[in-house]
Image (tube, rainbow, N blue to C red; front, top):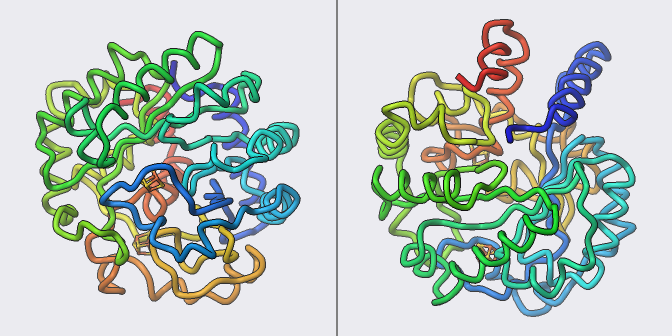
Length: 334
Ligand code: SF4
Ligand code: SF4
């Protein structure tokens, strides 16, 4: 199953409406982080190093919903931390689904067996399970044995209950084209998840492991080799063809981080969820008071190795929608 037709049509209509209204900067997907606490301690994580006083905070549902409404993004990715540790995560999701937002509930899956009963399958809801590799690689990535098997069991249980399940896989310098192929083949052909997202790891300043983040040329080579021989077309990747071209180094884009803004306990994060140059109270204030020209590869040294979807997928989506040829490619997943 690809991107559901309902979702593709809604996003297309939303982008068209924003353009007709003359809005130059608008959100496509909002990253919502209602807590930073997690039940794992992954070495590449840039979120769990906050002090205990921050880690114990939980964003009230009303505040999260108000931020989603103010921003207006049609898609919301709820991350953290581990969102299933939020005591009102079910209410938060239900309120967003009621407002017809497409919700991606990102999770390491450990709490899914306990919490699945709290949710109802909906075309507006997908569980997005973090799986960084096959058993050995994933367990090493999350620094705990048994997590891969637990995640696979949770995915199967959710699928049986009729939930849409996608995955999110981050790649490091320890990956090779072969490990990329192995995990994506497994998710695509054995686990049959609805869609897969992939990302080169971003070098968070706070991440404990600073040695294994990919540079731009390494990223391009890794994906070019992994995507070869028709695999890219065969895999149900939840990315536009132009973003996949970008990962392979066939095209380059400027960063448009304003289209995937991040809202956390601290407010709207400037300029994106990977870097924090301050916070604002509203999305509009974020758009109006950020000097966007300062950010992106070649402009800010902290962006030098970034090829993350929060900066570059929106640029690829906008480029797709302004070209008939690229729109047809996207429909055909070419
Ligand atoms: S599961 Fe996610 S939030 Fe938790 S430690 Fe790992 S990367 Fe960080
Ligand atoms: S390139 Fe864009 S998305 Fe990446 S870190 Fe810089 S501002 Fe953030």
